[in-house]
Amino acid sequence: MPENTSFKTKCGSCPLRKMKTFRPLDEKELGFVSKFKTGELTVDAGATILLEGNKTPHLYTILEGWAFRHKSLANGQRQVLNFGLPGDLVGLQLAILDDIQHTVTALTKTTLCVFQRDKIWSVFKENPSLAYAMTWMASREEQMVDAHLLSLGQRNALARLSYLILYLHDRAEAVGYATNHSFNAPFTQAHFSDALGITPVHTSRTIKKLHEKNLINWKKDQIQILNREKLEKLAYYDQDIKLQRPLI
Image (tube, rainbow, N blue to C red; front, side, top):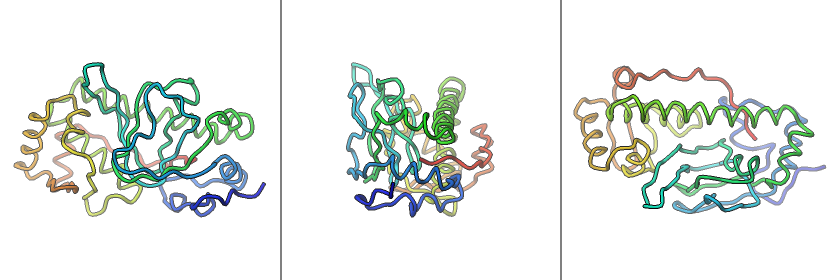
């Protein structure tokens, strides 16, 4: 079957596939993904991509932009669970479990590749290598959640913030969103507060401490790491081995 041409970005010429961080697809895999993709969706910053408890018929790969995954209590308190960047698959929980217990919101104008979630089983039936890729993504997400849980439970506020900045920088760098130790920061201090499990006031004071130590420079929507070695030591940070990631 020929590749669907009803959307702007064709799978065969996807800009993400040119990045070294992603594993190249063979001809069979690329043909399958080209049929699996049904469209593209562009949303503005602040738009809800997935809503907790809402059974959307779609799942998505982020093609461009930043998003974040979060969950709220009945009293309005929010926990930011993770941040999404190009190449991340969102909605797999809903596709597999028929339930989604978190919300995904765009941090910037975000473009998404759209897939029909009721076709998810065709991946497992027809293309085992892509099914493995999805399993890898789910395992990697679990690994990242483990690391954030360790921060919440064992790192102090200064170490938590240092770890989060390094983590976001390295993820951004892998997809071309960071250069010269600087990366775009479309999130607010409130996002960091909700990710770190500390109050906005405490977050602001902790950011100020990193500035005073000349470890970072955060101005408006840009964060610059000034001394990576010291920041890593403060965060107890071990940089990931740069393995190629699957991309669907």
